[in-house]
Length: 507
Image (cartoon, rainbow, N blue to C red; front, side):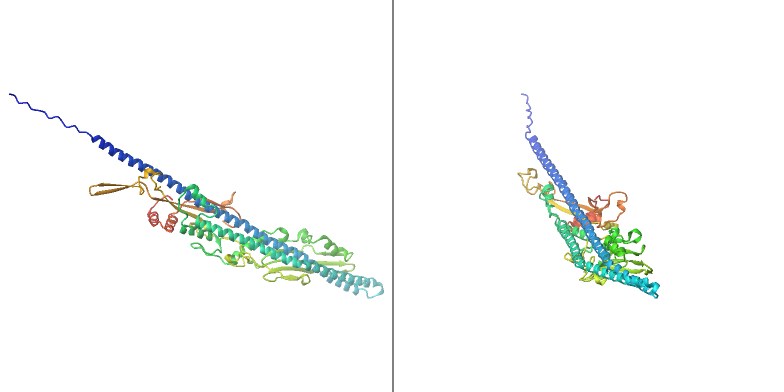
């Protein structure tokens, strides 16, 4: 009987596709989770960097506004000194009137002597009469001189009080400058004062505040932009008070109008004196003759400081000229008249003495250290220039460094993070692996610069100063040294080392 060989049917293999599908779905889920995590991290990173940029720029804008306020208020201080100059000019012009009368009195004594010298005979009796009349006119001039001195003396106390008031005005203006500086420093230090905290709420909620050390760098930059301000490192030193005071003195003198700066219009004739005085001087008292200041001789000026290179310790004004008198058969000689008013320290001077009463105090320009003169001393804010281009010629910079946790850490709100740590661990026998879905924390760093630029032709050639309000702000690229310094100050030493060692790194 034939033997039949039975063929064994193959075993069906079921479930392999299911395993592969499960693995594929696992990989796909991880890729999706990784994609969501990366997208979320990138979005948060962009928002954080934008927040850092806006913070650096906003702080720079605040600083630029502070410097512009210093410029405008410095002009107000200079205008106050101009007002002081004008006050002294008016006082000197008023004080010289008595002296002009007395010089005419002296000349009429000379005329009297000349007339008496010619009345030695009966036919010359008229000269004796002229001499007596000249003596009478001299007495009238003397009386008029005392009268004008008394008028000025009555003004002297009001003049002194006005000077004290203008001195206090300078102190008040500088006190406001000091307050602006103090509050701006606070905003630069913490990055949240005076409205800056709204940037965090709007741009990157949950991000950190400005790093304290970075805020200290901002404050240092701001202090280094004002000459005389304490707490500046890494820039040029403070100039002395004498050098600073010369700046304001020169600005105040250059800002004077023509009249206080140089009186003597109409061929140096004192036309600025009151017409009634000139009428009394030339006609009313003598009745006839030539009685007038000599043309081309009358001068008057008022200025802050005395002498060349003054540091503004005094304000003074002077008025001078020559008086000429001719009457009947007599003629006087050109006699010099002058008046001077000076305010200095606790007591100034005033000549002629008959017009003076009281004191003429003046604090002086920048009379104290900048940080101790908010209650007195007539200080102002001066720009601290620096010749080093690497220091941007003294123009201040602002820095921002902020951080933020990129992981939400809440599975219902961010299910793609899978767990609270945002990691996935794998194990195969003795081999273990961990997949980090996204970085835990991100950082944003930015730099802005406060720069001076006057619009128009040649605007870039004008050096930075605190007398013109043309300070502006913009974002500015880092140098490697600045970025390394910022990261080191923020405590991110690894990034600082990376920036230092990298070449050609775009910052």
